[in-house]
Length: 354
Image (tube, rainbow, N blue to C red; front, side, top):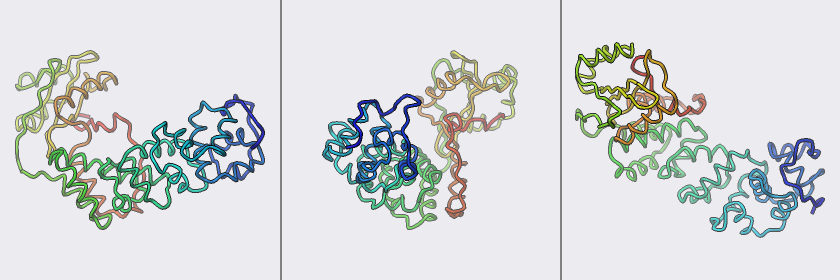
């Protein structure tokens, strides 16, 4: 073993060790920490099997180990003991074999966390065990998909396109709204049988179509903090109080396509609107007076009440439908990756009176 050390792996600033170019290349963001455990010229680190180098990076990122202990685990511990150090006493089988298929270069810490989360999930674990070469971007796509969609054919069609995977996951969730939870297995099998990118998204577009046309679903019943607006006079008064254009939506409200409440809970008041589409009722807007955005706490309370009443939050059926149509006709190489939306963006509010 290298120079014995009993200091924590994450030493204080100024305690760093020299890092050779090869260590910088192989260890990436972990290079400085690995150099503290295996000082330059790092021969013993380079001689470790790739699986044990990955294991060392996972444990070092977690913290709580002395450099000496980390050295011992990576070089001398049995495979089962090293797997238990990563996953706990009841570690799943095949951990070290999976780490061995991650390549020679260490992964970023978030990618290791994704691997650990997935390897504890049965469907993902089965899939990971049968993938010849594991890549961080591949597991990132797998993590976006719900468990039933973590199938080899689906991953093959999606490649490394996380935004496409997110659209497929959204279509799956929307389909369960339209067709019921009992259809989950059948829908997952349909996706798995798709023979290419275009057939996959054609199936996704098909399963979100309503089975019955034109049913009118009554709006959900919201708690007492939500005062329903059911008469034209009250709608006019609410529009004046909040100084917004609610009166422009009289036709939609009268036709049962939209419902409005005034929420007077803590952090309010707020004008709240739900719209009905092919997947049922969804929260479409929640604003204060003069269309002012609500504080996070108030908005989350409204969201929780809407979800508890059986309505959904997120984008509309029509927006998802159009995006799936774009996926059908757009080659994967033409897709431009977009940043992951924040939780407010995921609510897809602001489509009524902005």
